[in-house]
Structures are given as structure tokens and as C-alpha cells.
Image (cartoon, rainbow, N blue to C red; front, side):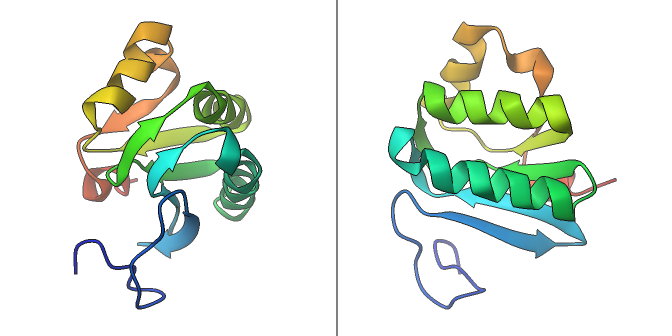
Length: 119
């Protein structure tokens, strides 16, 4: 079922952002790339997930190939309002974005979605 969104029964489109509840946690899933074109959609998804999740959100980055500074800014904004857990595995370009900006300490990184869902 890898690559198919079980909640909708279809493959997600590049740039799509979904919010799903998994194991009682709010999970934001960006697919493919996340840049300025998805800014409003991603901001709304993070806001919704933080509200519904009581200030805790898991962002599943396992299907993300590219992210830019808009994406990073929105994650920083979310981290200022709550607890942001980032689930991997991270693509090398996505990991590099966190490393070169020095923002890695703001987030809680997890090897995969299952470990990010643990309370």
C-alpha cells in the first residue's frame, strides 16, 4: 500500500498536504515537494492539527523529496505554538535544509512515523 493514501483510496498528488489522525495523534503529511506554492495549504494543515492535537503535531516527512524556506518557516511558526515531531526517513535534501539553517534543535526528529506516534 506504499504510495497510496488509504483514507482516499488513491495516490496523493505531488505537493498535496493531508491531515489524518493516526493512533490518536494528528499527522500532517506533505507529499513530493513543499514550497511557497503549498504555503497556505500547509499553514492551514499545521494550524488544524495543532488545534485538534492539543498543541502536539506529527509531520510525516517520509514522502517529502524537497522543501524550501517557506516550509521551514511554517514549521518554525508551528514549533513556537506547540510540540512538533518530525517523522522520517528524511530525504537528503530535506535533512540538509534543517542542518544548514541550524534549526534542528527546535524539533523532535524520529526515524519513522511509528516512533513519532509514541507518547
